[in-house]
Length: 150
Image (tube, rainbow, N blue to C red; front, side):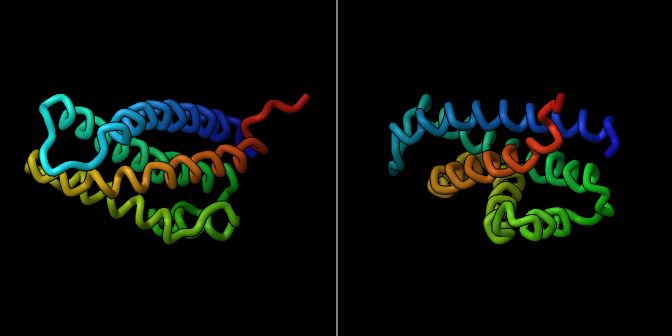
């Protein structure tokens, strides 16, 4: 096992965990507000932060952490689809869940009209707990590499 790859994995896990912590902060605030037909400017800003944090956390998880796990385990780097399917083969997550999270992230990332982001509020509130669970499972799996052994 390459120590450099493990150190990068540790760093990426720390970053995704910090991002998830900030996402959960936004999630709690927006969950209290709930879904509405109209949002105050402050409420809209809170939801805007929520979906931005969701997109960033999902992107970091899939593009950094999943690929990094493959590198640590000497699996040939492939596409994002390969990295997601590898996680399912390891028995960590259902690939379909990751594909749903990634599809939502892609939709958010490619929405350029700010007022149109309201259509994502419901999905992000629904998918954030799923993302949290997946990250917890990946942390558990990666502990075999990230926990210092004496």
